[in-house]
Length: 233
Image (cartoon, rainbow, N blue to C red; front, side):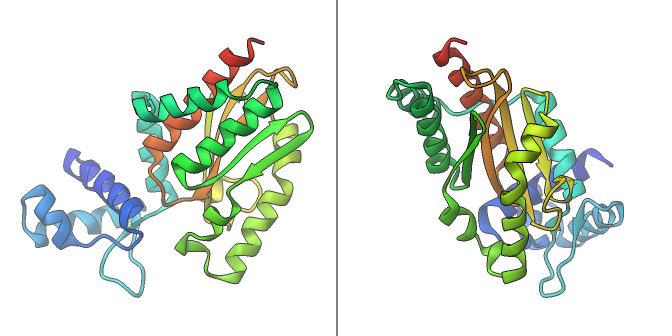
């Protein structure tokens, strides 16, 4: 992949996260100040490589799971951080918590507000979730079968977390990478942290594969770090 193709892929991913509709060559030609024909040629190569795809109902392109994985891996290497405003919101809500369970719930609720995704955390053997209406309000989930796939994922998420116990500080499972609900069209972004309930507690969000990964990853990672510090385990 050339440097320009990499930048075009990033732009497609970031534009698609914002507008929720396929990204066309005319928009990208304005961003990169080259002809639409040049952009179409580069997009054709990205499609051949499997990083983007061409929905039947549109001339634009959308990212594939492979494209998102390349983007996320780059973000993980670069490191990510939440905005100062988001950090202040997380700090304030964690501080209101008092009891560890309340602090964790407050942090999940704040992630829901900041990301507009479904928020979740393990509290002992329980999985606390908030923001279901955010998740199912996304345009990706107007299809009944898609909703059923998401439900399968949610029904099995807590036992899967307990069994697998992801060992990285921040883990991102994109689309078909999810070991449960492979066809759900969702991405799971979770941060591991120590709590009074477990050495491996988890907090994170579940949303459509179309999302602002850098921002959300920064928020989730900060939430885990802040909780661990606040709970002083």
